[in-house]
Amino acid sequence: MDQPTSIFDRVFGQTRPVWVALIVSLTLLLLPFAAVYLDGALDEFFSQNRWRVFLLPPTIIIYIWLVSPLMARMGANVIESFRPLIQMDDDSFDRMIHEVARLDPRHEWIAFGIGVILGIISILSTDFDQGTSWSKSYWLISSSLMYGVLAWAIFASVSSTRLNAALHRQPMQFDILNPTPFEAIGRQSLLLALVFIGGITLSLLFTFQDANLSSPEFWLVNLIFVLFVVLIFFLSMRPTHQLLLAEKKRRLEPVQRHINLAFQDLVQRLDQGQDPGNLTGEINALEVYEQRLLAARTWPYNTSMLRTLFFSILIPLGSILARLGVDILLP
Image 1 (cartoon, rainbow, N blue to C red):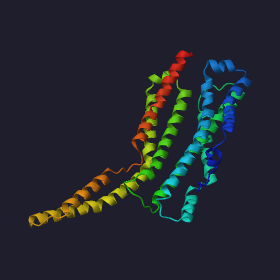
Image 2: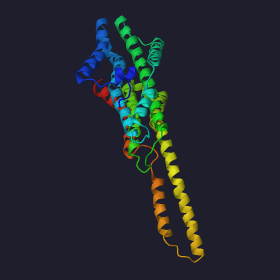
Image 3: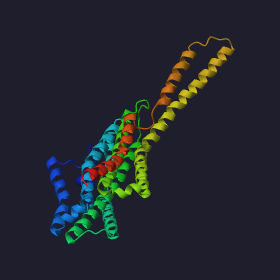
Image 4: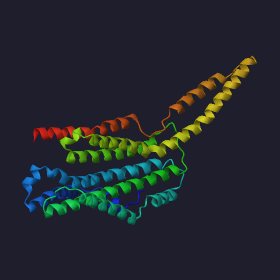
């Protein structure tokens, strides 16, 4: 079944026709140029590289608009992967999804409003010269909208974790030796990390200055961002890890108990000079099974996901080098 949509999902999470995406994106990207043109300050706008800063808010909003449908589809894939594992009838399952996934519209508007207020405070607290009236109005409105959409998106992302937590709490039957159904959680976590990396990269492309290279604060902040992305990747999978780890322990305990009892029985028979019979073969079979259980993964990611995350972390650094190259070639 389809997950119920919030206001955020209806605005950003729906896939739009390509022509709609192009028209909306071009309109948002042309607005700062129109505002500066009305002020008659295009020469200064380009000579002082203000166009980069002015393009950041619409670019971030467009980016959120484009990646949100991907996140929505990934969430639907997680529900679809978990459905065969959960021991619950369809009506109860659908009712649970609706109850957990529903967002209060008032909370969404509050999150958006808080972001807008923080954006206005951030703009008013800086000494950035936004130019004349049209440019000032555009900068204040676009920046506050960017902060509002960011706060709204973060609230929606955090709220979506309730659904994953609820899925993990349901009665479930699965094979610990077959982690395939849980890899959807790993892919979702990877996509979430990549979305944050993409946002960081866009911010660097539009706001990076050459002087930042010699600033310890710049490198410290970006190192914190990298650690935050890695933390997001693993924390998103933690409920699945706990579930798989508990099932692994549950399956291991009786196997190891049977192995110990079989060894005791074997030693007793040997001491008494009796034929061990099939005990040796049983012990070997149990040990093979034990090794398979011990090797079972309890994190829902694979090597490919880790490799993708590692190389994606290098993208912000690559964006800095690209900016330096462009500045050298096109001063």
